[in-house]
Image (cartoon, rainbow, N blue to C red; front, side, top):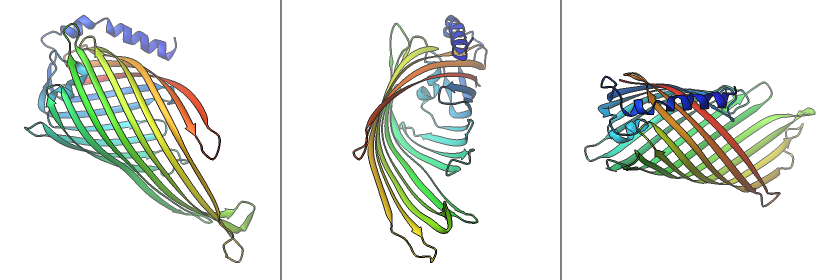
Length: 342
């Protein structure tokens, strides 16, 4: 049995316990302040999968009665602290975040993330990211928020016969709208819409020997600028408080500009003629997907979560100075998690 078929079988097996999840025994935990989770996500784009671990503390107890189980934090509308860890075959990250909710239902939040690259061909090999957010709970079922995120780094390396410098800054500004619509016949529909605008700028410098004459050297300088607009829309229909199916659509537009200048340093240490190259192109990506997830609380404190998502991608690249092309791709992702609430 293949891995997708196996995970699908697990999802179907636990979905047969819908009646149990909707009519939990009285000794099951319907109020909690602590939530811990360990999960594994396998997708077509990751060779060894992604391992995640997280912990969240809520300053006000969450009530999980008669609401979709995975949306507990959204409905609670209280201050919280959270910590996370992620690991893939090339990246390890650590994250801490917090949110403070005022009595007026306005809130502010922030997060810090440390990302370590474990392949020496990736530059830089580590980076720091932080974010600030603010928003308001308009009512029991609606949230609006704005967010600013920045990650940056710089590296300087000097070897026996070379020198290199690289620095970059990536900024993301985003606005979010989330709303849950209760329904009579089913649990409800959860909508999540996001608009984002990001900028990326990098500068690099390299000084290294000419590949067939070490008495001569290259000096190169390059800059990379990009601007990105993105629109994300997702809708999840909660058939029960434990089971949902969803659709998603993402539109991403990128504008890239790359400039490179290169000199040859001659044997007498004079600079040869500068060679400049420029490239500019636009890329538009449209993604759409479907998925389903299930939350099975099988004991007082522990639950099993499973999800399957299929994503399709269409990408068009327009190069004014060269050729343009289109490409398509698809990705199947499967996730399992063990969740504890107490």
